[in-house]
Length: 295
Picture 1 (tube, rainbow, N blue to C red):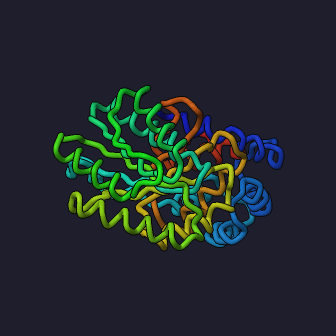
Picture 2 (cartoon, rainbow, N blue to C red):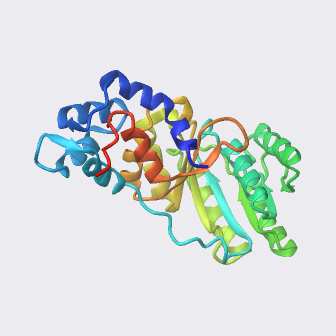
């Protein structure tokens, strides 16, 4: 999958090259600051990055790389080989790409040889249930669903119970695209989490927030609100290929102190790739640093 993240950062790199059209072995701090701000890194994080660089004005790639990598939280040791079923609750606001991301995750799991079950927990919109059903048909993956307006916690319970009975490896449960400032929906989300645990102790094994990459730093307040509600385990950034705001991942990672599990880099089923902090940082640095000569 190496190279997919670089593809997703094409627009961000294009924006950087307008500021630094010529690659250098050493780049001054003022240019670095301009580049990071152009890539939609928040001013606070930019100042923080500059602070931890060496005192000289001209900066080596290796020094900037070291500081930039430190912003990303590593994914904890994989629990996926322990828990069965491994239940993931997918949350986020409407339009962030939750349903498509669930489909891409299911596709990836199937390719890895795992059995998958979907739960259509967004009972607020009939269209959301239908969309996930269509994906389930296309991917030949079973799905648990109910009519619009039914209790989403019941859908979560039935989905997990079915997975336990049938020995399913992976469970992906959709939720309503709620507005993060609606307390009634926040309470509903907390209830879903409680019911998941009743269905199978320890579930959901991961609570994943889907964030629209095209929103850049405006998604940070949204992410903080969801994290305060249910203590998310990490995020997936969608539509990275459609934005020049790739630098916002630094700000999101810094604010949440949570891992980025995947990034969406296109519309195809295979265009959800595991986030690789080294590839992400190197793709940005490659756009304005010359390759250092071999000693």
